[in-house]
Image 1 (tube, one colour):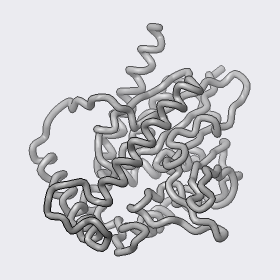
Image 2: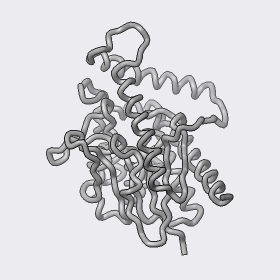
Image 3: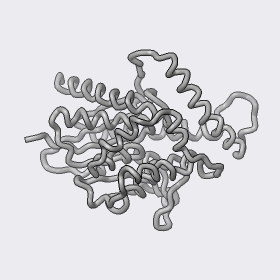
Image 4: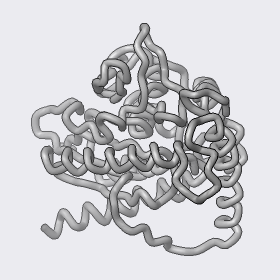
Length: 293
């Protein structure tokens, strides 16, 4: 009989693609994932797994190059964020139709933040796409999502690693995939061409951010300082790191897979293959470490 697993997937932008590798490694070891919860990108991967469409999402992600990713980012000048966040989900719906969370093959929970009520909320029912769109609405980056008159932003703001919200069953073990670990990231090999192309891609995004940032107060100084956008996002990262540490200390998973937050940046979704393989490798390392203990 297979060991049952309650799986928790953290927030983390493009690094969250590593969750796919963790899931595949778990299944390759014969584990049965019986429930999943996720925050932000963890909610996206978790939702597609829970509805039985992770293979389709993986194939789509693997076929994206950096230019495809850039075209999917629907930039907008708005004081609430510089990305609408509509284009990518509209594209995904042509591959993976929407469905209600309560109809998924295993229990799924997506974490979101009600910014006006200042509370974390858990979506266990209703539209899958509404839930994941709300969960990935990174403050100052992606515009908030309105659902039934309530304004939702990234679940990672209040709960980057929603351990307490995953459905538990008798005899299961708790497995957490955390892609925001404060640990060094060592590249297996250097690719000068890819590194140069990656830098160009990130410069394009940064150019738009800089233009958007000029609309905000306090961004006219010529001296090299953290701007409004950078300062806010560095602060959010720090807050999420502290929350993650507290949650992991409180709930103590049976198996913890840690992936460095330096592995890739938020929007580098063209690194799908690299992140998926990294997830597999670091799951194996965590698995072997657990067996030695």
